[in-house]
Each structure stands twice: as C-alpha cells, then as structure tokens.
Image (cartoon, rainbow, N blue to C red):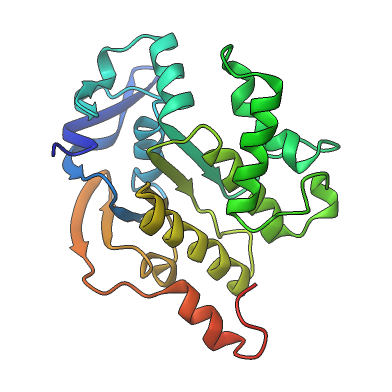
Length: 249
C-alpha cells in the first residue's frame, strides 16, 4: 500500500520585502497508513510550517506533497477545503471552542459545511464522537463548565466527527497538567490502535513523543533524524501507575 503522506524535496520560503526566509529546506519522508508519528524540534525549526502544509492550510514553494497519491500543491482553494473537511482532523494546544456553545454544538461545527448531512445526523455523529472520548453525559455543557482536559476531549471529538483518516495535533498537551496530558495521549493511542487513524503530533516534550511509534526531529528547516520506536510507552498503563486506586479517568 502506498504511503498516506509522501513528502519529497519539500521547500517552503517566505518573503519579507526583498529578503527570502527559507523555512523548510528540501525535506523528504513518508508516513504510512495507521502510523503514530511525533514531530519535534526547537522554535524556528520549521515544524509548525510543516504542519500547516500537511493540513492543507498552506502550499509548498517547491517539491511535492502527495496525500493519498494526490499532489496537494496542484489543488485549488475549494479542493483543499474539501480535503481538510473530509480527510484531516485538527487538534490544537488552545482548544478553540466556541464560548456559550454546548459541547455537542462545538463538535457539530465541521458538519455544518456538509450539505448532505441532516440536522439529526449531525447530532447523532456528534454524540458518538463525544462518547468515544469519554464525555457521555456532558453533551450540553459549555466550555466554561468543563475542565481543560474535558475541553481538549471536546476538541478531539470535533476532529473525529467527519471520520478523518489523519489527525494533526499541534502541542495538544501543552496547556494541560501531566496527568491530563496522559489522558489525552491514551485517547490518541486508542484511536490509532482501534480505529487505524494516522496520528501526527507536534510536541516539544520528549516524554509525550515517547508514546508515538516514530519521531521526526527537525532543526533549522531540515529533517535531522527519523527514529522508530519498537516499544512506545503505553499512556493507559502509565495512568494506572499514577493512580492505582482510582484507575484511568
């Protein structure tokens, strides 16, 4: 089977006046269906720019990005929007939830752009996604009635509601305490293992990267290492070790 993501000699430049800023400098790698990959690197390494390109939010200056065999750089704005809506789920450090809007309504938002999804189908799919992240019974709660970890679970449910093949998570545990971060990584591992969703997580924390099967390290716009982990840590087991009496939240 061909990789879900194939990056070849990818370059991304930005121009400020007459000066060119070279952010990505000819990187190449592939990600297979169902992999769990972490992306690490210091500030300015190009990892956020790469995530924007992987998420079809930006286009490369040169080189190719094939997503399911399709060259993303050749697509128009509407085609890119359709890919983002159908194939990719996004999770961010800041949860980006609408205030004074219920968890269920927040999760329904990506479905608003689908003309072929009825109101009842939106509600059914939103409830299913919330149940998948352990928020059954919290559908009507607004963000200010939820903890940080619960808000991130709502954001994950929102990323799932369209049935994406890929989830891109940018520092998803950065605003959370250690235990809550583990709970989020346990959800990601379960989605990867049970649903076969390709997970790509940007993180500055090597302890978080240890839960992935593979880690790409970037520095100064270059891919400096590509490490595969035969035995990644199990977030659920680590949660149990943290709280053997209470078990996993």
